[in-house]
Length: 253
Image 1 (tube, rainbow, N blue to C red):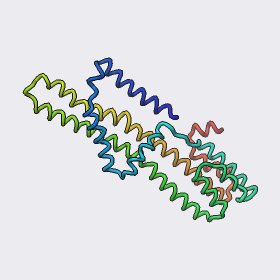
Image 2 (image 1 turned 135 degrees about the horizontal axis):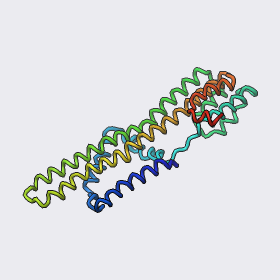
Image 3 (image 1 turned 90 degrees about the horizontal axis):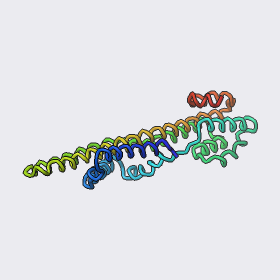
Image 4 (image 1 turned 120 degrees about the vertical axis):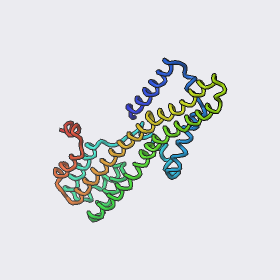
């Protein structure tokens, strides 16, 4: 569970609503037609820009903003070093049991190819293609939310323009100008809040998640190639520690 995302969204909504309540009533900021324009327009534009399957998958991807579980890089490295030591002592066939003990399909397949005696170049090519495909898949959610962050303010402005046109069409009633102007501006408010409190931050968070997953895949790739080539575990450890942050290295020491 990602507390920073939950705290950020809850506090952001709280600050906005709190400011509205302090300044006046909440009722004047609720307008169903404005919500329909911004939300409906944003979703419609997104479906035009992306395949339907990608658009629908983004709702599942959004869960990763709040719930994200990945094995820490230092633990992946430790497990690979253990596997490397086992392979040097008992041969590649001795690590076959590690395949059943891992829940990572990418690692499991790589270990299986290693045990099966697949050539190093072939293993490298397959793993690199899998990484490239995974990177593309992971980037879809972030890109969609980023685009939605640009669409929602635009539809907020469209809603404002619609409201202004309706207001100007009824200038013969001066008493209605104020309320209609307020309603016209609400759509811009909705679009800005949706973009800056939800879509853009969620896109940035998913981008960070994707980078974490790619680092893990690169570590596994380097480790498997080292095991297949029979490199010394210490050499492999030094190569893999490059992927750790300064804080991780310090903690490891």
